[in-house]
Length: 174
Image (cartoon, rainbow, N blue to C red; front, side):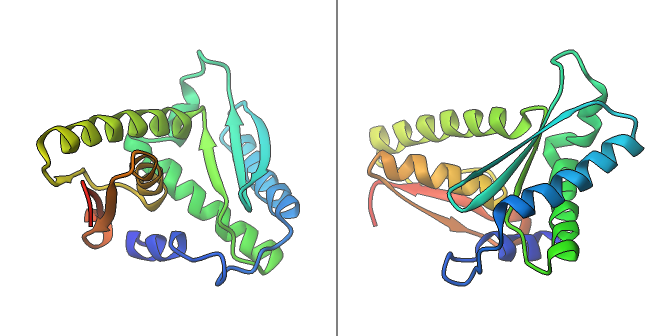
């Protein structure tokens, strides 16, 4: 699946998305990831959580386990690919599209914290200078994190660009 198709998959509204059994979705995804870890001879515990009508699957590993970092890849690219493969495995098993989020070794949690801090810094600049700020390109999930921080601050944000160049623009108002 290319970046543009992935963006479309992430941007589906709640009305367009028929909610499958999220616990079953998590179980199918966990089975797929467990098999992958076995094949790669990697250790990891799997945690499944359902929140906000979405399944979150986390592979938890000891802090000193550097082998698992190969499943995250540079800038999380391998993790993104594994997430898409896991979604396809769930689709194959259940016949339902999946919106699950896969995290490995806390990569997404750390990235979300970094994005929130970057968003707060950008918001401060917009508030101070009154400028319009363009952030670096990011995935739909990452853009959502930034949009939420901007909304909490009472500013305006929107996504601009196409495919892998899609990014958040923050301004003081509409």
